[in-house]
Image (cartoon, rainbow, N blue to C red):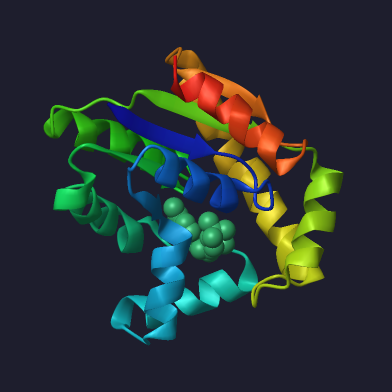
Length: 184
Ligand code: AMP
């Protein structure tokens, strides 16, 4: 079974790699950022509530995300595995996910941290040209990452599940290191 929690800073290439892994192992790629962007695009009530947070590089409040993840993980396509990209983003989301998986009698099989140095991230994010990518939101997203998401890495290190993968390599090399981890 492949249930993968995929961590890493903004701009590390998580989205691209998660999509590849999802295709290679036939598991859904569950990206909270993609779900939120679609909601903003469709101007749903979730999208309207999330938009300002996203545009300024802040995390959207947990209450907008937790039920969404709970429902998504119980959809039929997610019963036999998934790769989670962009969730959990803080320790309270990680604790929520732990409880949820316990309730569903599931465990994560892999927690992977894609490592890329900050200076490379800024460069990559500036090249990406997504709507929420300008210098000040990029700086803010990195700050939030260090403040809220880095503690999630320690949370999983303590549980002994975490594996680090170097994301500062050619795309194909990163994919092959990820496959090595996921094939274990
Ligand atoms: P991403 O595509 O993962 O970089 O996410 C884009 C934006 O969506 C982030 O900057 C946050 O504003 C929001 N977002 C995505 N996932 C989460 C999450 N798990 N918790 C809170 N906000 C999130």
